[in-house]
Length: 257
Length: 257
Image: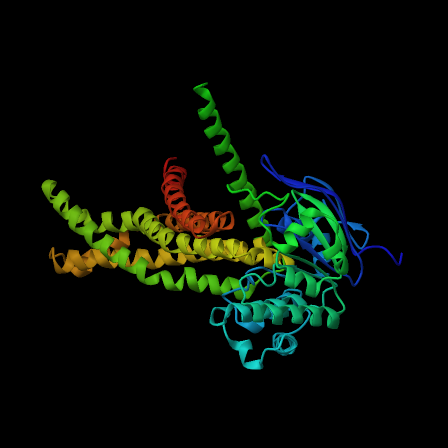
């Protein structure tokens, strides 16, 4: 099937105790598409990503990757599906006991796809793709600034040439210029490795830059989705309030967690 | 309202925790025996747990042996049984004090560092990152530490036994005026293989407990720095109590026929 979506979510729901985080999500991500999920803090963006990655198990619903149901999958099948994925974590999540190059080629080494010296070379090549020089490869992650850690995280996410890359708030905690550098890199590397991208963010500048399509998550549901060009004329007052960053509007911030 | 409600809740929570620990233990052991293995990680943990604990264990043992000789001298001289000091020292050290004191000291050192390290990896999403890089964190993080704990503790206790007996010898010969060759002769003649072996079996069990508690509490920590702190405390306290508790059970198994 040519038009089979890369990722298909149907009626996915998840609650932690009495707190309903996802309340029936339907979302399709087409092959080669870049979808950005926007929404305020605590609206279930991270839970959505973690459900697709298998880090959390939804209470109900179906998630299909290339038409294959991943919920309830055995661990060896899960590992096989996860081979298709790369993920850039919010804080970078670099392994601080390993040097940068070993972080980047960790997935390759774990699957024993290459020797350690080959892995070192591949790491340097991937680091070059995110604009970092070879000497960085032998540093430890703690010696890098936040922006550089994000870049190394990006290099790690693309190291095994994934079919889908997930970005968890890629620009959070960076200055505006570094944020834009990261956005450009995301656009560039996803195009170079030909990957499908699914990102979550609340940074509208970032969303506009990296998205083909935007979906807005509010109170555990997708309340609007459409091409990025339509975001300013969505006709949805929730979306308008969010993208213009107004305190006044239908979205009421929970002042107590 | 109902006074039995809180009691029931605590009891249910206790059962839940026991269940979780049992599941965690069986998963960890299963991964310790099933390939792929991570020899690099196992060796690193062996050095951390074994080699770097030597100073702590050595100092504990030498003072334990010295105090033991001194105390039993003051006690035994009341009914002129000073000759039994060599026997008391070697028996107490190999059967009890070596494994238990070394176990408790290393529980503080290793249990805390395992819980803090794995806990930090949990809250900075490094454990999630492992999963997305097709690496099972139970296999990569937990199994090598369990293996290192079980194998290194007996070696540490062997060292502690030797140093402890030497501590007793120092005090007996240089302070209490015993004849050196007589003292050593007494020590050697009285010692049986079972005394040492039972101590080494205890050590393996204690090593398992310390590694398990460190990993379990670290792995399940949540909520940032405070959560990691709590995990560290819980790891040390629970490991220490379980060591003393299992020490009684093992002693009863070995020496009551």
